[in-house]
Image (cartoon, rainbow, N blue to C red; front, side):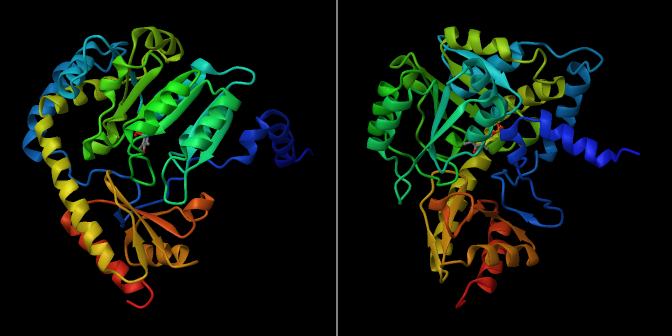
Length: 368
Ligand SMILES: *Cc1c(COP(=O)(O)O)cnc(C)c1O
């Protein structure tokens, strides 16, 4: 009898990409029963007084026996209106901006092709590069999480990356890197630069107006952080010449009917989400101020809907675990990158959940 497990082990070793065998899947911890402050979700549920109209719209327009519209034109025009996207630019939609990152990387991949990003930043840039066999070039930020312009320019010159990803505000550090440095990088880049504006709703910075200045720039957004994470809708904006090429790797019906109809409906009522976003920005400032009152934490400023904190030496894992035991799930960044040693990331939520988090921290922090 051949042992099935031996066969599988041998086959996987032989056939699964070696780089993939070493990688772990994107970690999503079980949050059931916990106050969920680990993934930058908007805590406010879809407003109940809109449910009836929403269900009716779905019943009328989501014809789920048919394939969805491959181009989602109604949704695109709603996005244009709400996000002020000029007719000069094309829009490409992804099943989350995660899928857009993958599509961009697929469109440029090839032997020796490189994807560059400052780090720590959004981990998916490096993961997608690895999946697709692109070389990933990570350029460390400075110790205070600013862009190291000289190091960036040097690596750009030396590595000639096909694409550079710049998250603004950056995840997980929450900061903006400043227009001057960003312009220098876009001007030095031999290829595409994608400014990932996943958190644009929580900041005044908006780089879509730079599309006029730079033919190699694309701007990426998502509805996930403003209250619609469950829909999975990412938006890429830029010159039609790029979008036309990247669109070729898009799977034909990537935006499902329920998402198309629901997102259009939500955009018709976008003031509701803008109101929630404003509330979260207020809550962010209150949370930062309260966190700064706690002993044993350094708290970074944030332009996003999360706050990065640094604990005392070697305390992050314990605090993270004891918070879970106290019913609160935040993100442990310690161990994910040398610059993030002792770091934790807390998603900004409503007043109730922020207070629960603060109370739990008060209990588990040393000297509290
Ligand atoms: C959350 C996040 C995304 C992913 O967004 P989805 O649209 O939900 O896939 C992309 N970029 C950054 C920087 C993020 O933090």
